[in-house]
Image (cartoon, rainbow, N blue to C red; front, side, top):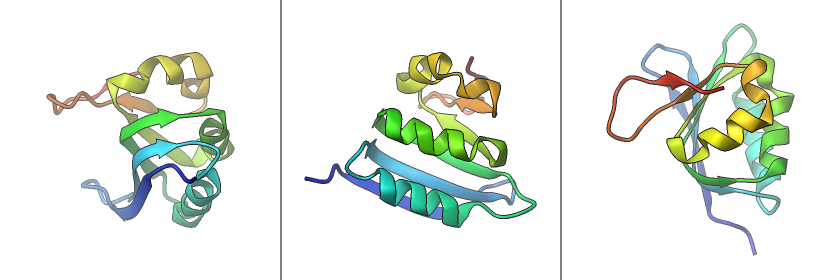
Length: 109
């Protein structure tokens, strides 16, 4: 059974491309997530990957993000801050923690 995941692409307020995921990213839907991530990455632009409404990520999801680390910036919720801090991904790309009740992001890692 596939885990619920909704992925959209749009333009971020700063004009760059944005991929937004809502739900859970695990082995059952990582191919879909990776394909959408690949399609959204544009030469000459850093992609904003908005994971603030993702409630679960497994190692397959992290592997997809590592593969594109030099081309993306990531926004996460405080729920996933520890996972991203320990993953080491913050040493390869910018990860911002976006609290639900605040407008100002903070850095993870």
